[in-house]
Amino acid sequence: MTCQASPTAAPGCIVLATDLSARCDRALDRSAQLAMQWHAKLVALNVLDPVALPDQALAWAGGASNDELMQMARQELTRDLAGLKVQAHPRIVRSNDPAEAIAQAALATRAGLVVTGVARNEPLGRFLLGSTVERLARVLQPPLLVVRDRAHAPYRRVLVATDFSVAARQALQTAARLFPAADLRVYHAHAAPLSGLGDADLQAQAPQAVHQACAAFVVQSQLAPSVTLQTVVERGAVASTLPRYVRAQQIDLVVVGAKGGSALRDLLLGNTAAELLQWLPCDTLLVRDRLPEPPV
Image (cartoon, rainbow, N blue to C red; front, top):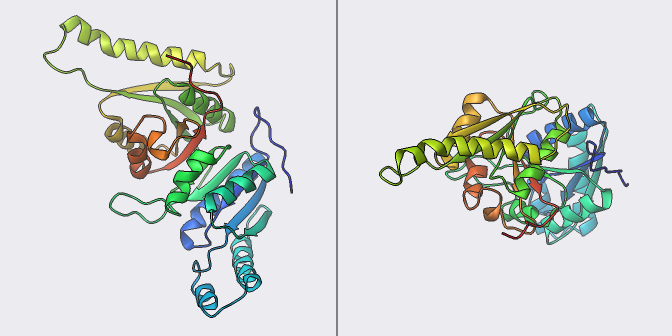
C-alpha cells in the first residue's frame, strides 16, 4: 500500500510503530486521532520481537516456527486495532534492526509521520524500544512523534523550541503546516548575563536583542499569512525553563528540529536536547532538517 505525501499538506499516511505492549496504547490513540483529523491512512507496524508477549515468548522458547510467531503477533495487533474509529492497516515484519525496518516501512508507504510511544517513567525517563528511537532520529526522513500523553483532543497548544537554526526553522514550518488551528508558540531560552561582566547598558540590551532575533527568525520562516503565533523568551537554562513553561501553560506538543544524521544528543538545542526529551511532560515531535546548515 502506498500513500501520497505532499510537503505542503497534512500527511496522507501515518505509520504507528508499536511493540504491542500496553504502553503503546497512547501512541495508538493519538495515531488514530491524527488519521481522522487529516483523513490519512494509518499503518500499524510491529517489528516482531519473540519475547514481547508472554505466550509468544513461551512459544519461541518451545521452538515455534517463524510463521507461528508472526501469526500470534498479527492476532494481537488486529485485536489492538479493533474498535478504532478509523481503519488501520496492520503490518508485521521480522528484522534484527527495528529502526531500519520502521524507516523502510515509512519510505515504502510514503508516510508523512511516524508515531511511537515512551516507556513508563524511570529516574531519567527511558524511551520505548531503548536505542530504537535514538536511531530513528538519525535515519528517519519524516517527522517522528513520540507520544507521552493520552489523546483527549486534537493538539491545541503547540510550542516550537528554537535556537534560530535551519533545523528550527523547518520545525516551525512543519508545525504551522500540520497544526494550523493550534495556539502556536515559538520558544527560546537564553542564558542570563554573568554579573560583574560588561557594562550595565550591554546587559540591559541583551533581552531586547534576543526578542529581535526571535522576530527575525519568524520572518525568515516565511509562514503563510494566515498563521498566527506568539514568541516566548525566557532567561535561564532551557533544560529547566522549558519543562516548567510546558507544565504551567499546559502545552500539548513540543516540536524540536533535528539535524540530519545526528544522534539524539545532537538534536536542536545541543546536548541538552536528550535531557529535554526525557523531562518534557508532553508529546514531542522531532523534525529532521532537509537542507544542510549554511557555512558560518
